[in-house]
Length: 268
Image (cartoon, rainbow, N blue to C red; front, top):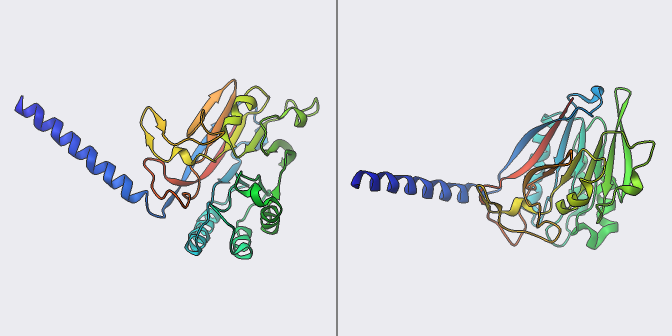
């Protein structure tokens, strides 16, 4: 019995140490690249191996955050991705140093374009934030469809803003196309999974900040309550929720939800 108690005590002690380590490391301004491959038979064969750099929730709040972002852009460029997508929320609160932010984002390289949607924070100053992203070389999509051309083939990019309604962007001409929906809030997956979209990319929730194994993220947001973190597949559609690049200014701790940039590889 004493031996069992010692084993249990050792396990609990180890778990406590791991928790404290996670808490300390993830409270720092560190981020990781999270790579994921999506294999779907509907992908045009020409797009096999096509890579997407997906960045969301910058949540910039201090000038130090700009240096952090500048270093991340250098690392992202080393990944040599084909397409760059931004999922919204440039600032955590009020905007600042817009010209500098735009110049940093302008330095992101992409061979086949840079596209963005606005998050709910961006929409408080929609015109200026759209201009910032446009100056940085992004095309900001406001419930719009764009074709991505590659090796003589096409996939569709749907940029949705405050809407999960894809019906106006899907017609007889493109209903059989491979489609990616870029929308800030993940709970629109409830509607999008009923359409002919193969992949939805979202952010907004920061992964729930504190993620417990088998339970998931603990903190939820409006339009980020049902789908909070990770990957979800339903009815042939997959949702990927990014943890976001940086924490919000009013919450500087995470647990098991690293700040991240997503590298997505499409596979036939």
